[in-house]
Image (cartoon, rainbow, N blue to C red; front, side):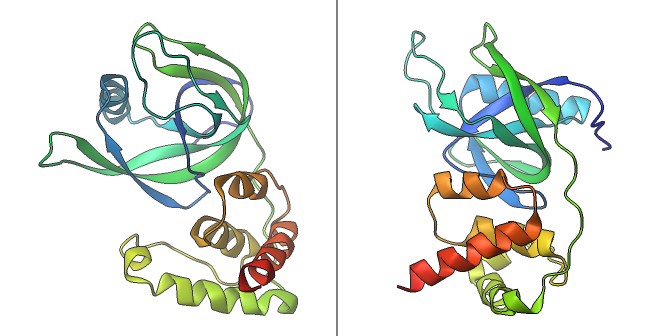
Length: 204
């Protein structure tokens, strides 16, 4: 589906304690009525929703008087690529990440679904990875061999700094807030440089 970057749109928002990157895949278990209804509409209308990281608050709504969580202002448009009814009565979906967007304002629908007026951000320009980041490419190759990661069937262009930086950012064991800072960067090589620093820190 083509998404215009030229105007603002209103889309459903799904606040989570995880960050979705372009081209990434994220499995979700849907059980709240507001989200099962949202997924049904998305499937029927062939549209998606926005994944936004929770700054503070909870993913699951506890009671009708519960407040919406506070979310970060940059998120990722998600499209549903697979779904199935689970044995426990919930709905399992797999989404893939599309373009980033900036949240301009939010409001709550009567069914407690969070809606957002958003503007889509320009697509990042392609950049070569560069020899200084060759070690990161090898780390990514190893991460992709992990059985749980392999099941996601991620597509990676190892020569494209965008692809390498997005996949590393989502797969490395780092805090969601750090992933969010990586999402908000606009230059792929800048993201790779920060990832190189983070990997060095993880290795101690």
